[in-house]
Amino acid sequence: MISFYPGPSKVYPQIPTYVQEAYTAGVLSINHRSPEFMTIFERTVALVKEKLRVPEAYTVLFASSATECWEIIGQSVIKNQSFHIYNGAFGEKWHRYTDQLVSSTSAFVFDPQTLPDASAISMPPIADVVCLTHNETSNGTALPAQWLHQFRESFAEALIAIDATSSMAGVELPWPAGDVWYASVQKCFGLPAGLSVLVLSPKAIDRVKQLGEKQHYNSLLSIYEQSQRHQTTHTPNVLGTYLLMRTLEQRPHISVVDEEVTRRYHHWVQVLGDLDYLDLLIDHDTVRSKTVIPFAAKPEVINQLRDEVKKAGITLGNGYGAWKSSTLRIANFPAITSEEIDQLITFLQQFSPTSV
Image (cartoon, rainbow, N blue to C red; front, side, top):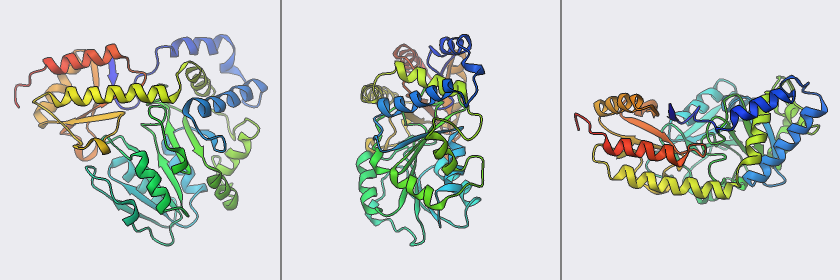
C-alpha cells in the first residue's frame, strides 16, 4: 500500500534497517542517563540545526507529539493570555486545548482563501503569546515567509508560537519570525509517530526562565535544563530519537529538500488543474501549502475515488473538519518517491467517475 495520507504518512524505506541497527548495537536497551544516550541526544540536536538551518542561538528540544507541545506551551510559556490566529481545524483545536489550560484566550479567525493584513490585526493588550499555524493540514493552506516576517514586525513584543507540524523538514522555515516552533515527526520527517521537535528562540527561553514553571513532568524549564546535559526529564523515546538522528544523517540539506518539494508541488498543481472532475480546494498559490494538497469534488465523486484508489493499493488523506465529505488530501512529503507520485498521477488521469 502506498500512503499519501498527510500524517502519519509514509516513512523512509531505510527505517527497518535503522531499527535493526539500533537493536544490534544495544541502543534499545541503553539507560537514558548513560553517555551513549547523551551522545545520541547531542548528535540529533546538532543535525536538526545543521540540516534544517536552525539559527545557532535557538534551542532544540524533544517531546512526544505536537499535542503535547500545545500543553507545554500552555503550562510553561503563556503568562497572561494566548491569542490564536487560524483558518482551519488544527488551529482551532490548539485554541480549544489551550483554553482548558490557561485562564484566558482569544482568537482571530480568517478565510482560508486569503491572507489577513498582519498590521490590521488587533491583539488584546493582555495577550503575551500569539499562536499561529504555519501549515494548516486540514485545508492545505500555509503562511508565507514574507507574511510571517511582517507579522513579527507588527507584534515585536509578543512571543510567537508556530505549529509547523506538516511543514518542518519539508520546506525551509523563517525561524527568526517565530519564538516557539514545533512539529511531530510522522509527516515531513518521514518517521513513525511518537516524537516531536521543539525549537525555541533566546526570547522564548528567557520567558520560560522568567515564569519558572516546574509543576509537571514536561515543564519546559525542566526539559530545557536537562537538555543542557544532553538528557531528558523522563525516560524518552530513545528509538525515535535514534531514528531521527540516522535519517537526518542521510538526508540532504533543507534547501535541497525544499527545492524538490516545491518542484513536485507545482507539478501536482498542473496535473490536478487539468482534471475535469475535481478542483483544487485553495484557489491562490500564495496561500497554498506545498506539503499538503487538498482537492475538492462532489461527495459522491470523492467516495468513489477513495474506494477505487484504495483498490489500486494507494491511500489518500480523507477530508477534515468542514471539508470532510467534499475533499481528499495528498501528502507531498519528502519520503514519498517520484515513482509513487507517478503511479498516483496515472491513476487520477485514468479515473472516470460515474457522476460528475
